[in-house]
Length: 367
Picture (cartoon, rainbow, N blue to C red):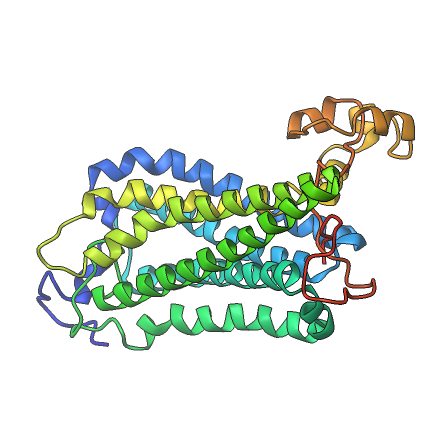
């Protein structure tokens, strides 16, 4: 890369060192919301990592993936907050700093999206092919999957520093400091992964609906409700991911067309995309009963909240159907129950596998 060209053309990558916040007054209105979103995203995802590390019951493949996702989203939240505050206080940044900042941000977002893909694949095999899942899943596969979800983004995130960002490439108007062609390819990757995730969740949804219909005939109402809860959760996950990321990826792809100028929409869609990193802990971990209980023990121990110990079965049963929030968990006076309707579970790997590839007629367990 040549950083000493005296009078760079405004369309070359060397001109991308100017922070987009210094050119867009509208972006300044999103500095405070982005800072708040970034801080909340970091806090929520840090809570997830601590919960999984603390509770041995959560030392399972699904929660290892959730922890990896939380780490990626934590980094994404930090970079979002840093980028906006840095632009607010200084207005500009150096070329190298901007490229490093963008590389780390792209790394974190790519790792987050790839982890979402791994989680969807994990859910797919657990629910649609439980027998095959039990016979092949082991710790080595989990480690390999997590390593891949980080190595691939590291390589892709630092490609601009390796040369895919010199004066031969036109600068992106959406993501400052990056070549337009690089942003286009990166956005296509995200869209393709999103399509794969949608297909997997659609297949899972169909399987859950099929199993739910069979439970209606058999009168297994509790298990039917548990499976419907899984379907609702998957619908929320898919909808949240698409709503948060598609607008931003769309303008990144359209920016490749020279006749379309969409820079003014960047701050709005960037904030919307940042929301996804904060929602992931709520969607993947918050709806799990064991995770909720661990959150309570971390955020508000019994001594702090002046509530009965967790082994008080009378109080636990009387509050089993309570829908908890951060406030009620601390001040509700009782632990949250984990009835069939209060959590969704995956198939327990330690039990004997089913005789066929159909769903076992009981709530799924957290593998």
